[in-house]
Image (cartoon, rainbow, N blue to C red; front, side):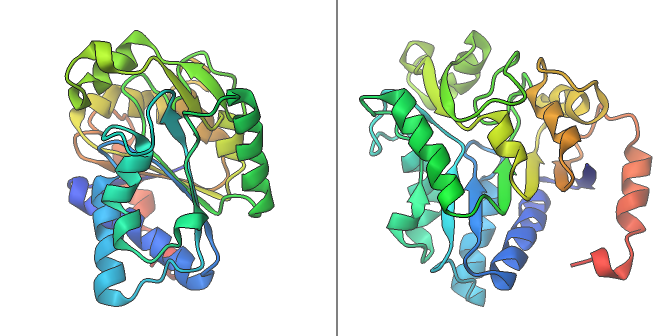
Length: 260
């Protein structure tokens, strides 16, 4: 796990966007795993800018999103499909048929989850998986106590996650209690993981993920098992890390072949 500490959310978004842009330029048919929430917004804004100003091409790419609320239609303003349309898909040239978000309106949720897993496998697996982290350490909607080998499935959200997400709704009572999420096992099969965390409210979770024990009670700690995980954090999110000087030393001492 490589920890990269940057000044602010804009710098985090730019650094993560450079990784994805390099992936797309090296392999235009890349499969991208995408995330929602506040943290990836600067990343998507930078990818849109790269597309418009630098010709970054998404026309042959495929995407799979981490999760979706159960019971929200794709055009609901708080659905994750809507989020992706507004923040990325509507502004780049990725074909709509190549974009995949779990179906929270499916009549048979378990069958839809199995089909989602098959879709990822048929596409050749995820090349780069973007991740955010919840204040309780969740990745995707894999809440604390989730199996570290879990696959795409139906989950019940914790009360804390519902309260945290209430800011996007008129009240906490409107936040869906159920979701469909990629599992931790699914996430760990991606070839590269990009974790993005910004803000002081994520500092405890980041410290548990990076420096705490591997534990289902901090699902993001499963990234300790991944062979190619990059953790991009701003100063506020890095505030409770113990070995910040070492992480900075490692990043600044990279050999030329590891630099952009």
